Each structure stands twice: as C-alpha cells, then as structure tokens.
Image (tube, rainbow, N blue to C red; front, side, top):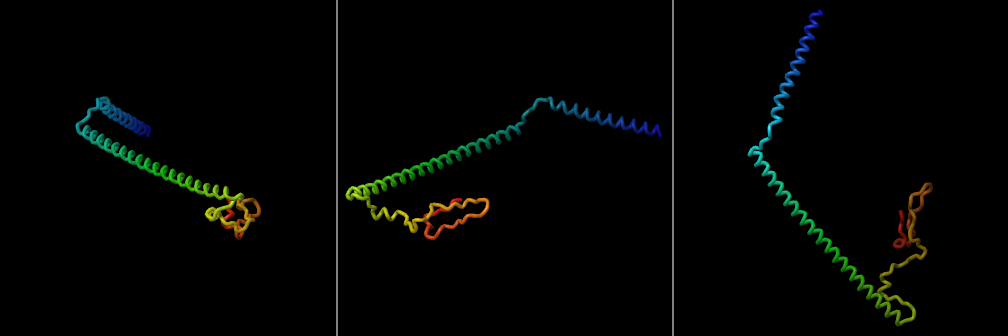
Length: 160
C-alpha cells in the first residue's frame, strides 16, 4: 500500500513537471515571435489607405453638414431679428399714433377724454369687487376654495 502511494505521488510529480515543461516550451516558442520586428504587408497598406479614404470622406461630409447647419441657424437668427425689428417698429408707430391722438384730444379739452378706439382695447370690468388672483396653494388642514367668482372670469386668475 505504501509502495502504491509512492508510485501515485511519483506519477503526479512527473505529470506536473511535464505540464510545467510543456508550458515553458510553448512560452519560449512564442517569445521568439514577440521579439521579431513587425512587417507590413501590401494587403495591410491597401486596407489602411481604404480606411484613410473612408475617414477623409466622412470628415468632408461632417464639415459640409456643419456648414449647412450653421447657415440654417444664421438665417433663422436673421429672420428672428428682422421680425423683432418689424414688431418694434410697428409698436413704436402705433404708440406714436395713439399718443398724437391723445395729445390732440387732451390739448383741445381741459379734462382727459378717452377716444373711442382706445376704449375698445380696454377690458370691460363686469364687477369692480373682483380680486386680482385667488390663492390655491396647498396648505395643511382645510382646503381653500379655488373657484373664480361669477362675473370675474376675465379678471381674476388662479395662483398655484
């Protein structure tokens, strides 16, 4: 029994040493490939140039797209600026018209009188007791009524 155990241990040691030796030999064989200088094949060069052409094409397309996007944003900004200037000019003209008509009417009479066109623009107050807003913020305890009183629909606003 002792001799069989010794044989098993000896076979195990031989197996482990042979596996270690095999790994070492394979490692040494691989190391000689690691220290060789890398050579580039013609096939790799053609693939590399194809990739560089592709990269150049993509870069060209991206710059073209960026230029078009910049042109679009610039034209939108110019249109917005022009629309804003037109709006301001129209507002200035209308205020000049209103002020000239109100100056003419106020200079001709001693008391200020509203013209018919200016009274049409003012909101009609149905009920003079309407609050400007109703506070509907959530609170602890009883809830607040959040209904606009009758006749105050266009005047009172609900604040949350």
